[in-house]
Image (cartoon, rainbow, N blue to C red; front, top):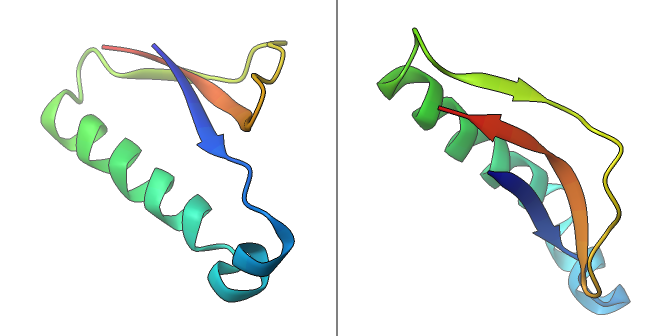
Length: 60
């Protein structure tokens, strides 16, 4: 599965700061804890989708 994060506008970026990254990290941590033997995360050379930034790819 590919993981993407939303590209916020400048106002939301000022308010939210790095919380979007923290939320993604927490979600990935939950996936790892529930599947430690099979969880794989890697950053591939993927293109961003309009309105979203590529973070990485997960294999469970």
